[in-house]
Length: 269
Image (cartoon, rainbow, N blue to C red; front, side, top):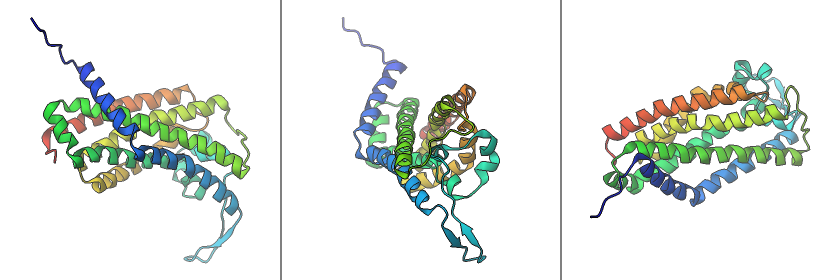
């Protein structure tokens, strides 16, 4: 007598992960995004170093303003908590805006294009006709896109190191040490799932309308922009890593439930 193997949650999720991992990591678009994340800090560090000390005139006020570049390489990865809190996050100068935190908005592009393509191509409709469990889809997309987003963050870090060498900027660590820097980078990677879950929810709302998903994602992401510097300063510790991981877990649960509800209550086309 032939017996049928039970299709458990673990097996369904494993299958979804294999499919999504293959679809993302063979996609040229993913490598383009990682390449952009690598090149951007090199260009920023080189260009800002060349412009450092340049005097410009504000066309509205007529006042002369001096462009200030980065004091050291690590400044493009953030600031120490003593200077980077809410006050540091609210400043709008060149150095504070052109840093690794803008990569989280690039992750929005990665998630929206990847998810919306499922609905635009009809893949999602066919998938849910065969595998009706929307939860598997949401979890798989969260995990795979988080890995992709983490790769973009690490590519930016690598590009920053190379760009700093090209721009001949100092690698001095003021107010933090190597262990703090590693904790800061890990914290930034740990924060990626928070944004991925938000962008995933916006993407399942937009479905095949990629432009709508991106607008919603960028709008929602702006509210969390200041949180990045506070949760992952250059002088981060293990506590910051734990807080980032806990926040990611809580947001994943809450936004995952919302994404699942949206998929269950709305049309897939």
